[in-house]
Length: 96
Image (cartoon, rainbow, N blue to C red; front, side, top):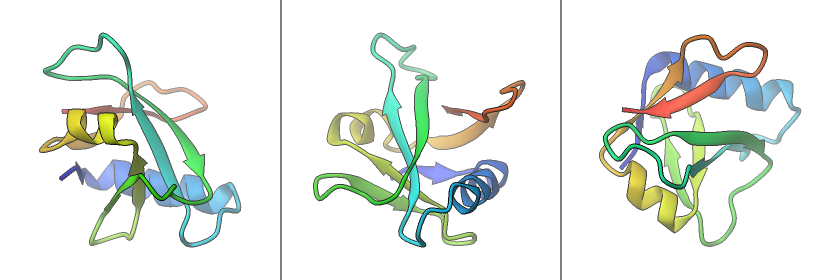
């Protein structure tokens, strides 16, 4: 299971709302190939819905939703999604 730190969860909720996505929208993440296995990098973008094969992670406190394909779900299992410092205009996420 992927958990989300509070800053990451709040940022996801804001991104989804600002993108005009429906309540079932969320953040789609993909693990970067060749990433450091101790702290793998991820790409992230707002997605209107999960696909039927996605694993969906939901933050209990904020309702933030993260969608991941099976390969990414395996990489992030047991980790925490965090907001990376210095993301600039577009927030950057990582997993710890």
